[in-house]
Image 1 (cartoon, rainbow, N blue to C red):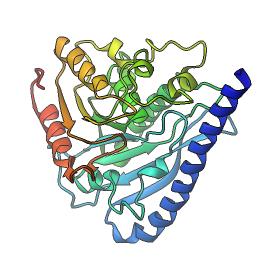
Image 2 (cartoon, rainbow, N blue to C red):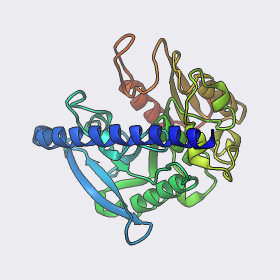
Image 3 (tube, rainbow, N blue to C red):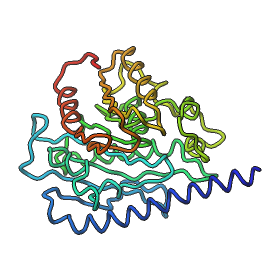
Image 4 (spheres, rainbow, N blue to C red):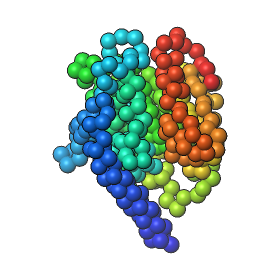
Length: 313
């Protein structure tokens, strides 16, 4: 029986990886064909960390056009750290690039709105090799890289927001609740974010044959330690939580409970419930009705960075 369970988990993980590679190759072709049409400059494959000699971690940069609007007053541009999803076992920064079905993805649109977008890869888990806390450590290293490049890129190291979807949203919330000054962000936007990994497998509407939380943490990892909801304090960065009411993978209760924790701690926040939406959307929602969430994201960031404080929801 144990061998059967392990085999099912491995097959599930391989399926995720095959889909990730296939989508990545498709998006690479689309990216090359559409790069010249966009006024956003995209620099790909930049090393930001070397875990060892064989495993460099890379990021992509999305640089706004010179005449792009200034979202925040000042000579330096604010930054979006954009974190891909994939259940902590799949996904890639390639998935954030233009593709045949999404020619103007969120990263491009944010850069067009005047934000410098940084999209890093991070270490993933696989059967028998849990990765926690490596993904969080990698993203903290990406934040350090961003701050080291502040003068060269003309970015504002005091206005960095993390934006992620699903597993990426969980990691954005982890950064938002971090107590480390050197890896602190100033805002987080979380699409369908798992905030409580202890309760997630019990709350999940659709059971999974291979539980991503178990693959992430392994037998020795602490679900509570890896759950941002248990680390909310008054110094937590403001959060915009966005969740579909029909999400079968990460129930909306995960974001509702996170919003309540933020409210109790006096943290600025907002929760947007997208009626009837399932798991996996970002700024442009296609079903059950078309909805563009980018204006709400931009309004939230302007509100946070121009306001003096106080929670809202």
